[in-house]
Image (cartoon, rainbow over all chains, first blue to last red; front, side):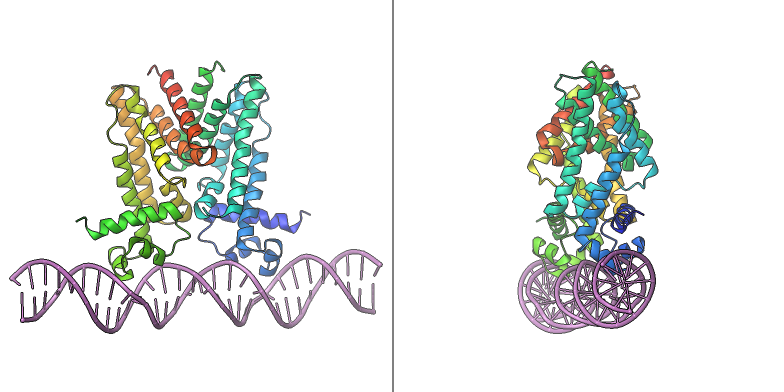
Length: 183
Length: 183
DNA sequence: GCATCGGTAGAGCGATCACTCTCCCTCTGT
DNA sequence: ACAGAGGGAGAGTGATCGCTCTACCGATGC
């Protein structure tokens, strides 16, 4: 069986994603995870640790979500955006879990580190994909653009609707890639 | 003199923007606004009302911030993004006040209404600017893209740096406009 | 056989927080 | 001159919350 810490982390991720970081006290988290308070605190010794645990879990979940997909061509580069659209479709419309956490704990170094780490790795993924498709060229500005579109799409989906946001992001991504001769 | 309610609202906007919505109790807000608790509650009868007051104030502030600028050509369309860059330069690096509020109060209808309202008006501004520059054409998808870039730029500035984010947003915006023959 | 580890259940503590209330002061209009 | 509105100061209250602690249970390993 999966170890209990992981099982709790999965529930924490789900709970925070659904109900946010503010409304939910430790008792509510305990109930969602269906463990005793003692056990919860054994594996996550503070509420802050629970938040970090949930973010680390989400980091792994989303990383796995972006694996696979087309191996070559422009679709290899666009895949994370396509996949984000599918993620937003199956998830609650609550925006990015990491940015929500950052909104709530702007002065917490430990939490901030997990977030920055996750986002930096995501940004690097666009660099890697571009290098795979167009080796030898410096396309850092394109990678930054794709990352920006990823972040913008997550927020715009809540405000303008998923359809509109997905189309807009892919439209802009294709236009930017085309400007560099990638089609 | 400006009326006291406005003066308090300005301080609330500043306080929430600097320190976030979570860390600051009503007593801290009172101290920042330099009024008595009684007076604060007279004008904003609950903490929720203070938050809404701060958001409404920010709505007016940012709307004024985007006024002016080039009257024609592509720069008229790009102006909000340029101006956002200047905003982020002079502001603390704490992301979008509205989305931070939404992260913290995902189930509060009154707060959500103010946020949706603000963002919808911002989105419409891109439609208006495009219509001004290219009258008679349906460029809704371009407007959606520009709005998405605006939202993405706000977040990316915190994660990748203001310079990188500004360049990426303007780069993508120009590429998308060029794809429609607007240069 | 029994110690140990990791689990459940839940009462209780100390701190914080949103909000109220009382008392007093200072303008301003008539 | 004086009533009344609107301001200041700050103690008090009830509720919530993060966290700890005590007491007990069941499986596993020597």
